[in-house]
Length: 383
Image (cartoon, rainbow, N blue to C red; front, side, top):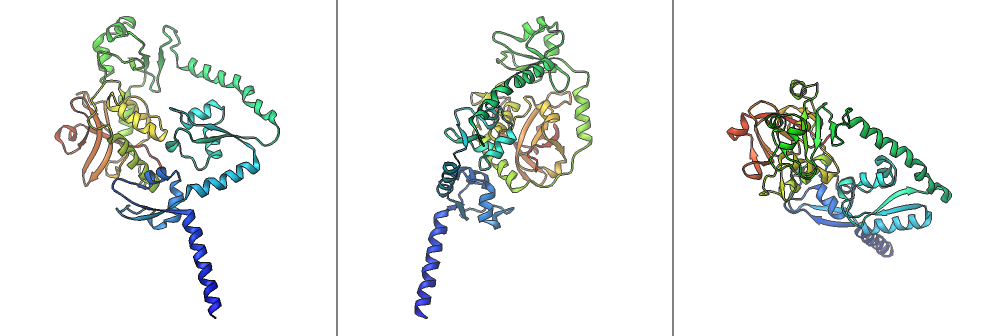
């Protein structure tokens, strides 16, 4: 009987040691979310929820102890699989690269790249990460396949450019956007006055079509030269009249929302700069454009385009963190300002944005200025 007790204790002790080697204990501190914790340990959110089922859908409390999969034991097993098969080609992530850029570089689809790297999330890749870019099944001849596909890729790019460029071929920098507007991409030395002369449009008309425009045009800034056949206001009215009923954000998307808010909040106090998308200065849409890039999501470049082309409109009562909120501040009723919701207290909505007067700040819909200029809310993080 005593021998049986000793054996039982030994087996229990061994299983505890093995489990402790496979997991790490993490104590939640202020400002952390499941998403940020997963990124910190380079694991997926689903891995954390699997070990901590009670945390899924629940509010993350301070000092909560979470079990995290041990990356070292994972990577060891992955190395064994890799060496046994010896059948993959990898890419080392460099500065400025995203999954989209890597997929394009190796001429494979983004979906295929994600399939080859199930543990990698677009928003969490870092410099030095190894990304599997191909699975070689048989002979080295298959390596020549990307070369055979190159003419097809070139044809696609040429076709896309041909569709966007002005049919009159008056200017290679003039193209048509998704709303049918003629848009000019600013090059070095161009000014608003020069564009008005070049396209025979008054400076006043250019300013009305581009409410966020500034005198010193940054290189790469897109200026609307001529409105499309379908008026933007018509698109906006259609959206306003038909808000979409939606469910609450999933725990995964709520974590992404917290991550986006944290990223945008790093720039609080940064000055306003027309056309700006960096820490040197942001305009309102530039701040949103730059922030959502952190989760590999590319938004349209202007607030009016975001209103019709980013996600879908929801009712104000369904607003949640991470949603985009739109206003009209130009006196004409059209959307020309955007921010991201950071907090909701009853009827009050707080949002982070870049204002002309104060730069990047957090404001409230209860402030009289924004209360009477609110237009709509869009859900971008879809479940």
